[in-house]
Image (cartoon, rainbow over the protein chains, first blue to last red):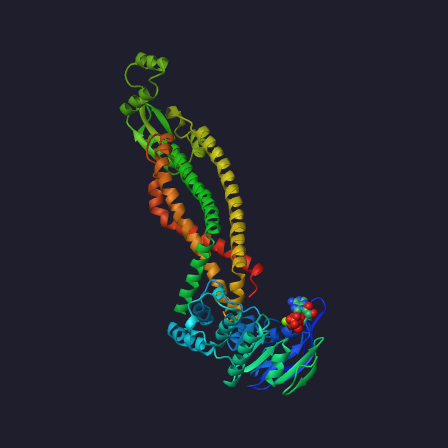
Length: 226
Length: 304
Ligand SMILES: Nc1ncnc2c1ncn2[C@@H]1O[C@H](COP(=O)(O)OP(=O)(O)OP(=O)(O)O)[C@@H](O)[C@H]1O
Ligand SMILES: [Mg+2]
């Protein structure tokens, strides 16, 4: 599903994001990317949804070579990849429903499809009863669930989550992790960037550890080593 | 396609209202620019009309001796009509010539007295020659010295308006230069203000733009509302300028008429007939201007 071949990302002037990273993530996998701060985890995630372009190497997603993806092709990629962040990235002036609908609107979806899909994904994240609220009327965990619902509207093959539980307490974090696991069970490949040792250990899925921009370990059913 | 257009339009209107004062400032500047342009158009029309009116009155009266043979007079008429500088030649009978001469010179007692002394009509027929342009005046006078008929000419009368016309032209040229300079300055300020409006708008919406891009909005979908917002501002500016210009010319038209002898100069009429073209072109120009500066601002501040 996701293929990295000797991928390096060097930020100008000469800052290493990641260096010579090679990996192969199969469809339906749930992969955690762990490592200390500044080791290139977010860089790796950004390369996946083409927020950054690799300096060297080759990246493929679902057979699509996105190494030198053109600017006008990026929206097509983004509609096939769900993204979730630590800071939720919700529009404060829009309701829960509108925030989720927004992702469909910008892609030009017809109104009847929006009326159909939005309640569906809000149901998955268990927020259908709060669809009229604004983000500041929700807890952090609920806001993150809205963001996840939004990332699901295009039924993405891949979900990239960069520290989705970073701002949440243990209980809320667990809920989010359970949700990601549920989405993974539906068949979506999940790439999770995290600091959270307990979460990773609980998951018992593949763990890739980064150190100074390089992969230092990659184990199936791994545990967070540090 | 339709649904996207609707959404883009909605976002554009939201931008407009949410940055209301920014919109007002932008419109003000666009209106100022348009105002100078329209004042230039009015100035141009009024001075052309004034010069036209004066030139219409420029004429040379050519009086022939009573003894002048008809063929000589006919020759003179044909010759004058063949000149491109001559607009019109009118022939006047002997009696009419006398009346005309007396009318023109009735203030000059010496001339009136000498006419009475002569008794009878010393005039032959005369010609009234109208020039195409004030500047052709001298040429026509020279042409009248043609030996074929110059001996038969008793007198040439003319009122020389060329000084007046030169004065009008000089003044309006100065005013026009000033006006053009002012429009250029306003134009540059307008470009800067539109640029800044878009920049602010991008800044205000940067979070929204970031999220739009993250969830897969296309370039066009992100950019279109900004362009549309500026077209909207241009449209409003054109309406504002319509509301300013029409009353303005209606009020000032009689005043201009006074300068050139009381007749209406047809300014309102001119704008009524050409308004669609004038303001249509201004709108197109304005849209090009705003789109240009919007594009500039987006190139700099909106990395899509
Ligand atoms: N836009 C950028 N320009 C320059 N350097 C950058 C940029 N983004 C990241 N870096 C650098 O690249 C390296 C990797 O950053 P990255 O954000 O990928 O780390 P991370 O593993 O996500 O860290 P954290 O756990 O703190 O989020 C760091 O040294 C960082 O300073
Ligand atoms: Mg990070």
